[in-house]
Amino acid sequence: MTPNIGNREGFGIGLQWPLAAHQLRRTTNVNMFASNMVSDQSLQWLMKHVSQKMTLYYGRNFTNLRLNSDAETSVIVESYKAIYRQIASVVEDSFENVRPHSKQMIPIKVVNLVEAGEEKQLTKLIAKGDIGCRRTLAGFCMKAGVCEYGGIESMAQCAGADGGGICTDAIFKRENGPALRRLKAAHEKKIESLTSESPRFNALKKEIYAIEVYLSVVNG
View 1 (cartoon, rainbow, N blue to C red):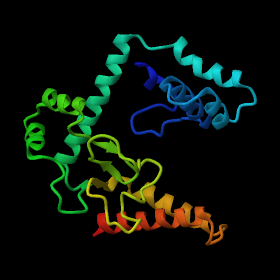
View 2: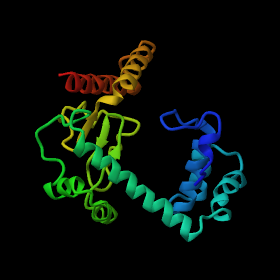
View 3: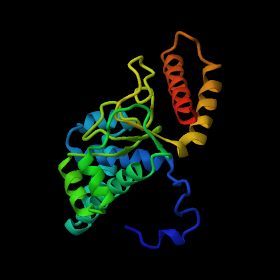
View 4: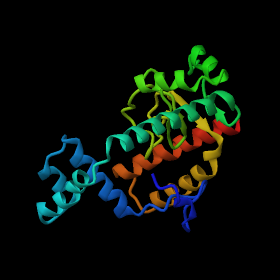
């Protein structure tokens, strides 16, 4: 959407995206407002705005700057292509993308399409929701459709920290190891200041366990 963004300082392939907390907060506000699933009153409470006018100021920004149909189509098509590239990566690089169990996660038909370079056919399957591949903290989630646990801010369910075993749709990406080690260290430091009875303590213990499972798998 911004072709020359790579010319700006701080932006580039492989660099951390410089997203400020307020940008994330504002985007969340706009998306919830546009969904028509969250009431203005609830949104005001979530955003902790003193006046509802503040909430509507952000929310209505979406309606004032609504994407035209061509731009919207381009964004959707690119999202499908991104999923295709992720699926191709999982199929073609089994060393980097570790399967923590013996389940045949990707149908043979899809594997054959990837190997044949049939991007258009795969994109159609992705658009229909027949196959999927989403990034997670651990690597990828191969579940078609929505996962109720997310896997973006937590990997407890992905790695079986709930006691149910590693999720059969999970792929562990070796590249994520260094970041997860740092996250584990941050969690361990945080729980030192928490009581063992607090919900946050128990949640972080599960995250630490999940990261340990991940490290055991990718290093095993």
